[in-house]
Length: 118
Image 1 (cartoon, rainbow, N blue to C red):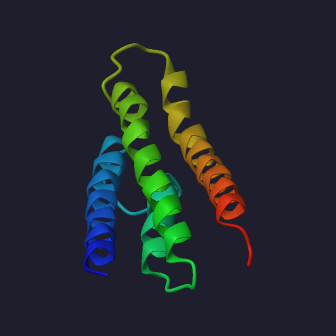
Image 2: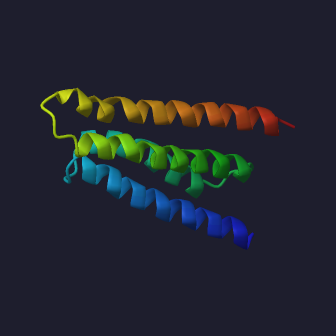
Image 3: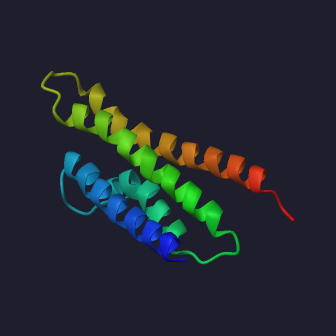
């Protein structure tokens, strides 16, 4: 039980740190665009906090969300530091959260299928 609580706390802390880093690359200030960018990580935190019968599913999917957030930092940062005049690099902010959420849904479906309904 202690290990599960420690894992939950770590997922929350890392998700918050990655969320701040991600939002920082799109400019600070609270607006709908930044909430959209942070949505996969907000979902990860929400899944960790929700008490369900199948807490393993919540931990696996929220860990997948955290993993996708870490992977997404690379294109976000490269778009943030891009010095060219082409504005298409900013499209990563519109597309990446969708891919992150799709990745989390695939992981949830696979995990749900493996754990099965009893």
